[in-house]
Amino acid sequence: MGQRFEALSERHCAFIGKQKLFFVGTATAESRINLSPKGMDTFRILGSNRVLWLNVTGSGNETAAHVQQDPRMTLMFCAFEGDPMILRLYGSARVVHRNDPEWAALAERFPPVPGARQIFDMSVELVQTSCGTGVPHYAYQEDRKFLNEWAARKGEEGMRRYWEEKNRFSIDGIPTFVTQKNA
Image 1 (tube, rainbow, N blue to C red):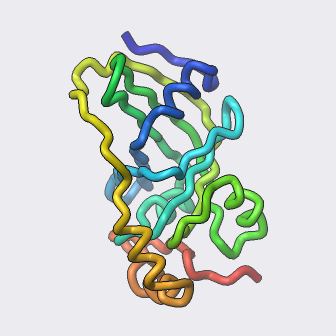
Image 2 (image 1 turned 120 degrees about the vertical axis):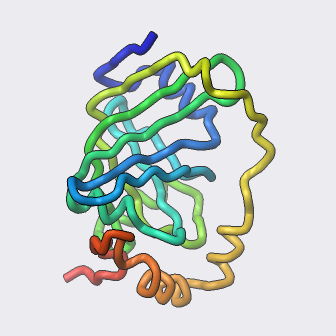
């Protein structure tokens, strides 16, 4: 049976801390809906109604494009081991780019990750749990290393060129501002 909460509890935080994977959902009124899996050590809970996640470079940049036009975001965590549960966080997020003044203070909450592109700062407005009994059991083996190795080989300048070429716009043509300089 699903339950709703106004904030994250200690139980919710403990559950999130055990998960190796989460999913991010965003959209604008006119865009395609984007659903992205996220992993690595990229999620932090700052309080009962505030979370951060570090976004690393990928083939697209849909989440950043969407959130800058419509800040709605849903995060979903699923238990693939142990007791079943699905936990969703509904809220509003903002994008913090590498050139933004608050980047350094927020980025220090994460281990250094080659290709770190943005940080999403989400205000949690609703926490929902549901049974998750339809989710199969899977065993975690390890994080994949390719993305970090690829980003490290590209280096800072190579990543900026990649962002300029591949990450400036969503698949619907919405700007991401990933390469924009601060005024």
